[in-house]
Structure formats: structure tokens, C-alpha cells
Amino acid sequence: MLKTYLWLTFCVTVWGSNFVFGKILVDYFSPAVITSLRLMFIVFFLIRFVLFKHGLEKISSRDWAWIILLGIIGVFINQWTFFEGLVTADSTTSALILATAPILTGILAATFLKEKFTSRMLFGSVIAIIGIYFVVTKGGAALHFEPGLLWIVGTMVSFAILIIITRILSQRISPVVTTLYSNVIGFVVSVPVIFIADDPVILGKDWQPWGLLIVTAIVVHGIATLVWNHHIRYADASKASILSNLEPFIAMIMGVILLQKPITGHEIIGSLFIVGGVMFATYQRRKRKKNRQLQQH
Image (cartoon, rainbow, N blue to C red; front, side):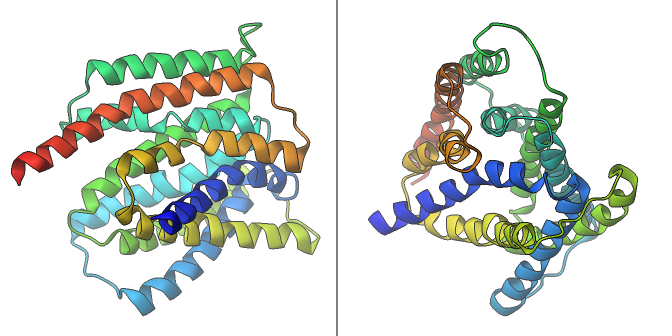
């Protein structure tokens, strides 16, 4: 079990660090360029993994419609808005906003998958929103919403949609195959967007940013995802949830180390509200699901 939680901690550390690495990359590449290049390297990695380990699956026309939607919204828009946002948005604030994705996912699941949205989830959502307000207004001093944060909100929404569509498709298609197909679609869509959205188109001139882009693409979206999916089967759901909620704190620490960005008091307080609200909102859903499983047995 210790090995399992160490690997899960590694994944959370990688994902939390991605906010800081993304902040570094937007200094050397324009956002759509980063998006397209990262998706290209992710696709190369997934093709090798899927073909050797799983093989391809036959997809119905109805599921292809879902996969195309997933590729455009859950992959391309999710990646693109993330890097567009980091051009001006703070990496820590971005991580805290994205931490609320499970709450939006719960709302979407209640709307489209007929899952119950409880009063506990509503109360947790309010707590998390208070935390976001506290961070964005820098402790209530002034409401100054950076344009980049609007892009990050788009990232959060598209991520929640990604989870919902993936959950729908997982009933019929292997998640790994779904990931490959949707990333291929996301990459194809991203190429023409470079010449529409990026003005000017910026490519890194030194090998260091290129190395960072390639390594983070493969490790963050390839290796870490596969490791998490493998080890999560052996972990307690509640403990794994606690680990996943540590991403904003990892982003804070990595911001100090790599960006020399000090951690402020309002960030700490706001993060406690956000993470606490998310955990409060999502805990009951897992508990109720576990009870249903016990009753079925």
C-alpha cells in the first residue's frame, strides 16, 4: 500500500507542478503552439502504448460523435484555454480555480446523468466559492479579475465536460483507447488554430524550453495518467481523493522553488476554503456509492 500511495503522490506532484511549468512555457511559445506541440507528443506516446498493450477497438457512429466532442472540448479547448490563461493568470490562483472542477462535475452529472445533487454538495460549493473570491480579491481588498482567469475558468468547465463524456464512453470503450482517439482529434483541430489565434506565432529558440515542453507533455499527460489509473485500483477512494486535492498546494510550493513567487496569506486561507469545500461536497457521494455497493452484495 505504501508503494501505491507513493506513486499516487508522484502523480499529484506532477499535475500540481504543471501549472508552474506551463507558466514557464508561455514565455517561450505562443499558447496555441504549445497546445498543438504537446498534443502531438502525447499522441505519439499513446499510439505506442495503445498499439502494443491494448490494440484498437471498433467504434460505433454514436460513440464517434461523443469522441469528436471530447476531442474538441475536453482535449483541445481544455489545453488551449489553460495556456492562454497562464499568459497573464497567476499559476497558484489558476490551480485553485481548477480545484473546483469536481463540484462543477457534480452539477453536470446531476443534469445529464441524473445523479443526485445534495444539500451537502451545495454547501461545499458555497464554501469553495468563498475561497475563490478570497483568492481573486487578494483577501477582499479589491475585485480585480485578470483576463487570464476567465480562460482558466474555461479550462475548468471543459475539464468537467471531459469527465462527464469520458464517464459515458467508459461503459462501452476502453478509457485508454478513448484517450488516444480524442487526443488525435484534439491535435488535428489545434493545428489550424495556431494561425488563427496566435499573433504572432512564437517558437522557442533554445533547446531547454523544447526539452521542458516534450518531457512535461509525456510525463504529465501520458505517464502520470497511466500510473494513476493503474494504482488507483489498489487505493482507498477517500485517501486518494485527499491526495488529488493537494494539487494547489503543490503549485504553491513549486511556484516558490521555480518562479521565486512568495506564498501569500490570502492564498493559504483561500486554498483551505476551496479544498475544504470540494472535499465536503464530494465525500458524501463516495460514501453513498459505497453503501449502494454493499447493499447490492
